Image 1 (tube, rainbow, N blue to C red):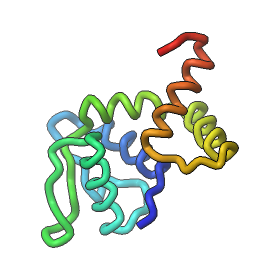
Image 2: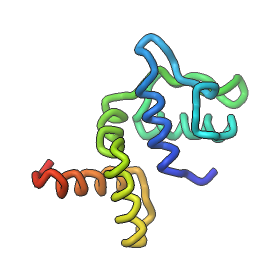
Image 3: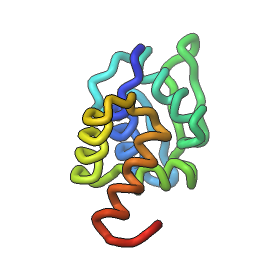
Length: 120
């Protein structure tokens, strides 16, 4: 599976919307992913420290998570805005740099600083 940060962003937005007493799983995903790809993305989000309460594996059914971690909220707060996200993608394309999670975070931070005229 090739990682797509637009999917990562979309999943984080979906996960943030789940009630605090709920969990997020494959049936709730609007990303159009296959179940194995969904599971891989949930595992990726867990490895990045963006989600907590991950259960399930390919052998036992689809992965689920309980919600975002503080790190997940921080990342999403930087990339949530469509305007900021589009600017991040364009800056990465213009520079020829691969858009990694850490690069997206850094570019979003710089873009927000430029828009607000302050240093974060």
